[in-house]
Length: 364
Image 1 (tube, rainbow, N blue to C red):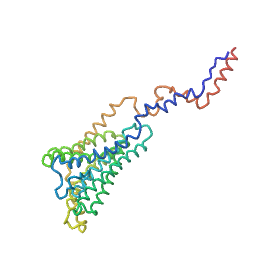
Image 2: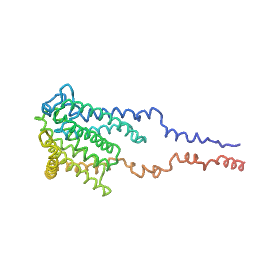
Image 3: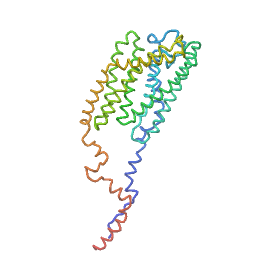
Image 4: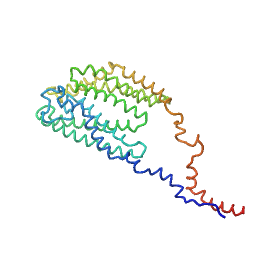
């Protein structure tokens, strides 16, 4: 009597197929389409928030009455030469926030390109809308310096370029490995502090804001320190990442200071464009002076937070989460339970039922 039971190959491979194709209720949270509106809302609502609050007249405006657009037309972006540093900060922060919309879905479902394209679509739509709306407000000031097309077009180009640059930095933070994430966090930390300072001025006014704005600079050290903690200190070449990230904060802070000084010189009656070279030389001198006068307190805080995190993170991880056990789960816990199924599915054990029948006949 033959006791062998032949099991179909498709039945043995069915559990594996179940893992590859999860039920619909498990994939619902990984859909890509919500990323587009999230990126749009993040760009418009978060990125441009300081200037929107300023335009709502909650506090005295940052601009003079001569430079303001007409009251019925609210400008979302500051298309004013005197507010060029703020325009750069707002658009880059807005692009980064729109890139963070990719975190809506799980990172391991193999759709990174699709999610990035969806976030880019939302960011470009928000950029186009706000740029057209703000440019329309600036055109109503025709006859003024900022309403001139020769001034407005470069501001539009700067806004679009900074939005795309901020999107790339945000995508590096969302998808990058620890080294790339730390290098992208360094400029974003400086921009975030400037964005928060602009929002503080918009809410409290220029008179009361300096008391709080001076303390926001420590946020750079906290954000950068948390990113450096994930980088760690081993291997030793990762020290280069620490140095580059800290130097990026130092240089970018001085560059924003120099840009703020240069934009003051871009005004009517300043002899433009004849004195552009003189303005550039003055900006370079201010940049060097800002480098030398930089107070390294936030950088020291970043190093302290990074070292503390680098020492604590390995202790907080479970012991079984090492790279060896993750790559080879069967190296320490014995043979994998799916190995026989995979072996049977590939074919070497297919003749087993016939061989078992022969052995039973010989025994009888």
